[in-house]
Image 1 (cartoon, rainbow, N blue to C red):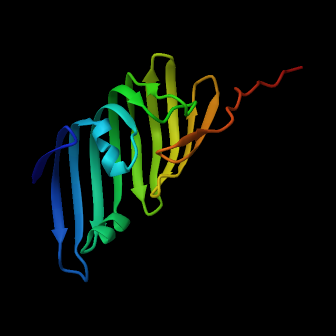
Image 2 (cartoon, rainbow, N blue to C red; image 1 turned 180 degrees about the horizontal axis):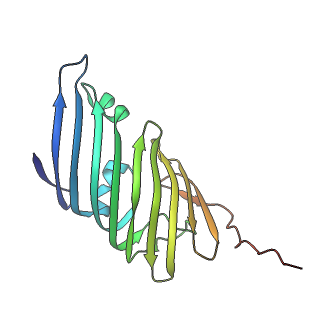
Amino acid sequence: NTRADLFGGSVSGNWKLDFTGSEPSYECTGDASRIQAEKLAPLLKASIGSGTLGLKYKLKMAGWDAVSLSSSASAQTAFTWTGGALRISPDARSPMRVLRGEGQAALDQDGWTISASKWKTPSGIYQLEGSVSRDSALALQFSQNGGRIWKLSGTLGKPEAGAAAPPPTQARHR
């Protein structure tokens, strides 16, 4: 069992360490609470915004050194985001003010995949899905119930907005 104060909040987990194979493997399941999003910037090499994060996570990795641990890491997480702003936004030019966000994200050899993500903002509710590669390349999509879609590319440090797709039109019945 571990507990640490990190990124302005607290992280706790239960670790399983296995040194019986050719390289050690590590597994951890745990929770993080009151993490300050702006304090994650040095780790992510880019600001993702401000606000308070909570996570339930499962992490696996293997190896003897930081490079091996990082490249082998895989994770699943359910997250909540309260208050502040998400730097990645539908227009990519200005942060999206967040009342509450929640969703799921998974890390594999290619990077993070975000799914089942819903963001309540003063201007409505947005869904966010897509991926962020290990080298921070974005392939994300925001959508709203009206069917409007915004695509984002670029990098975590410099997101770029694609053309916004208009809401789908319904076919007229004769």
